[in-house]
Image 1 (cartoon, rainbow, N blue to C red):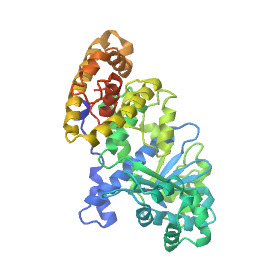
Image 2: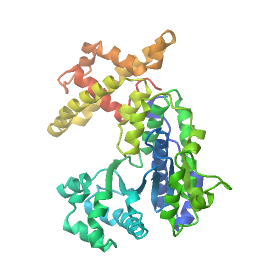
Image 3: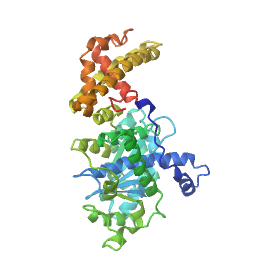
Length: 415
């Protein structure tokens, strides 16, 4: 099965009626799409509980915020926001996302535990290119007087504004609803490279089913939710107490909405090695990892090769953008180049796969074998660029293959 023909999983669809009823959405479709995107984000963050040293011990869904990640010394409150169209401006953030975080901060402040939390806004898609938005995302303490006034209008006491902004984190660029399944499954493939695509999909569906159940498992937010989370912190070094055990009464109100580390380890295979720590750290911080990198890691590529392809792709991207800006037919010409490069790459992949029967190194690290084979034939790579569009530069053409990989058109030997 090629990367382009892989079927997207559709787990959790049985929860549509439940979600529609909970939200009073007559059709359930718009709300379901938003809830499902949030559940997929929950799965990605739940996986970060596998981090041995500084990962969260458990996640709580739909209490205080869309997602709460409970660490040994802090709780991260995450508001997950989708968009219908366009990019996120700072005003749009104030109207959708920051209002909820302000309410959480005010409630925590009144409970005298606001210092326990970080307040994070995770945004589907990109932010607007305006300077005020870019500055606010980079450092919320640079908020303008207008933004501060909007926060006060949402109920934030003026004297608390600076403290709230110091604790605020903005994470734009979250995977879109269209691509989040691909991102999540490639992340899982990178974490468990020995699993087949079907096995990864089955595992993803199981985790998503659990996350969807946790999202809809509550009967309303307890009045003392901050106190409940604070009471749960002493248990993070092992696991949440079970019925009848000491501490059970402290966490019982959020038990059905809690996804713990022990639950996760019971559903997933062991991680194969330490190289997964960096990926989990990036996922935990809400940083995007390109599909190209995830595929290459899953296909056994070394960090050196991945960094090399990333650098070549970045150099190529400058040339590609210049070409698109200067030629009316650039897109069709680039598509012709893409077809030739992909034919060569797929033929190389097939040849290496056939030879892998007697070559365990190639079988275990197909990305390394494919890259080595292609780069050993610079003339053949250059001949793919007949126009020429990329100056028949074999390095730029190899970088273009990385670009095509990020568009799910080449999988580095995993199919």
